[in-house]
Length: 100
Image (cartoon, rainbow, N blue to C red):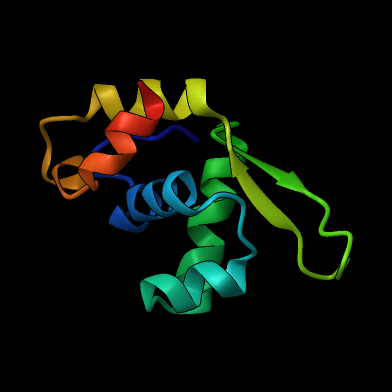
């Protein structure tokens, strides 16, 4: 699997943006924050994990709800690659500043 514009759900870019802005979150928190179906979030997280753009870290307060953390180098490469596409043009400017 690889991340390609047109073949990747827009939710993946929204999730990356949210995690960069808000820090590590569990799928339920992401789903609530973005007002997305849990199934959509789960699918996007699997795709991002397989590409090593995200890392799953244990939640020591509740081991049933792992947190997801962004691999900034990988995310930067991906967002730069698709910077001028409709997928990434909606990424908040604060995200670009945090990655610089």
